[in-house]
Length: 393
Length: 140
Image (cartoon, rainbow over all chains, first blue to last red; front, side):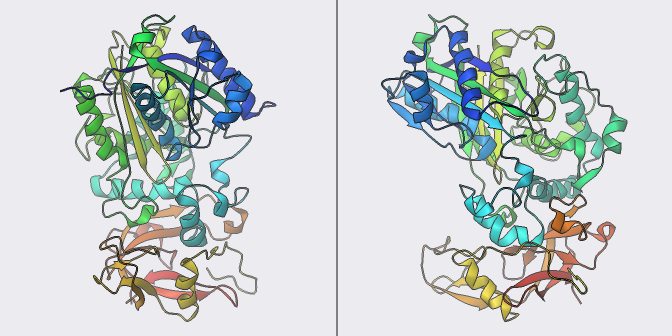
């Protein structure tokens, strides 16, 4: 019997602001602008919204958004999804569950983040007081990692990447393939921050080491902007402005222990390792059915490990899989068709959902994946929390 | 991190909750981890409850300080000015003999000499009169 969530809820509207470095705006204003665009995209009015999910504390509080949008009866509000960049896909799951359970009919999920002008993740421990970081990671870093010189994502995920490189002999050229694919794709995306700025393999290999094994070009961008996603019942979705995109499968996963990156028996067993099989089962698809993959790309090596967790290739084999064009447009499984966090902008995973929706509506012009029917989006955050959504047209 | 003639520059632990107890033993140059007095399981980071059996009973048991490198980072770009003189530095994850894993800077090993399974041991650095930090060095 099909899972009760399968294909019950659709994404019906998406929108975003411009992506910049430096802004005179606020995250509230940006989140509202993206929300207004997402509502217009769906052909809905603000008062049609009766639920709001705010991603991982990166968007303003649902109550604030509702007050600005004029939502008189907010029936469902979630103010802080889990897991940093895993929060966007996890938010789809929360919204889909609420809608399928008839707690709300139409849910808005905005993500507004000024990761360049506001909270810069690379400033953890300096401009950001770790003891005030919400969730499980702040105290761990403040008490046990930072005094030993490990306090930003390039450090934590570097432990994982080193283990991965050592265990499987992964070459920098494989990580480069991810960075180069994202960059090539971003040139076809008018919104992408790095559009028109070429990146060659030589540039990549010559880029400075930040923290072994990460070079500068293994690391994602920090940008300012917002995007928003509107979801409603499949029944309502059929009458709205754009073709519905169905949430066929969704899941989240949390590695153990989730508050201490270093302590994992197997550092390469990530949240997505547990989440992916559940999402495939719900959607009743296999990795072979995927037409594209918007894989959360905070760092190139993380993408390789996620591709394995997704079952796209076996453990240790992603390094070979990504070389030779398989992950580029026209290849076996194009990834990051918008440019991703590496080359478009850092919206904590929400722009990956926006792109997947547009691909499935076949609105992507030059970067359109031909005949796209099914796509996957993943989220990744904090110390390796994972989330996944399988979407279909 | 030796810092001849100068004040200790690097960030110090916040020492919140049970972490304060861990560092109190460090000040006495003792590496101790929590050990459940009901099921005997060792644990680190410090927690109120035993994740193996659910017991709230534990002792701070003396650890050998010896372990093997599971993974590491070599930090090249300082992400805080305090680390300007420290780079490049190595921060390994170490599988300790008691079965827990621990994070601390590794002193005296060149980045190119690093490998999984390298035997290391804990020593203590008195950072300030109040705070002592565990560090790793190559096992003797």
